Image (tube, rainbow, N blue to C red):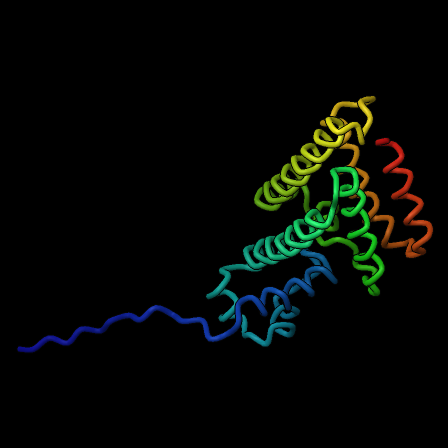
Length: 201
């Protein structure tokens, strides 16, 4: 007797995953993690709940993918910014200018998604906290490298160690982005940047 076999074919995604992540990112960015419902994500992406769960397993996993995509976009922007700098001090200045430009185009005053997430979710969710810590470590390491090189080239003073200045700059970036939610006056924001840079020289 001839047997028949049923082969289970893997499910194939029939949508643009990167587009869905961008659409979901916009929702999370607007409302935050906790205030975003599955229905919000359904409305934004055009996918039904089962498609979202099949592809991302949970709202939590989708949020982490959105955070990673958001982080990657900024890493590319920062990398391109650093290529334009002639020296480490100028590179640091350019990083702040990048965020200044981001504040200028942020008409909805949403702020930085990563900074917002830190305020909402840090120490409340292990996976998200680990993601935020890793992002912080990467940024601080980049700043340490720039300050260390700047001190060797006598462009940055040695009043503080490169590690101390890197943490200062990281904290300044976080504060700068939060300040930009309420203050959009370019002259005021440029004055803040000038004061930060003057601290290094």
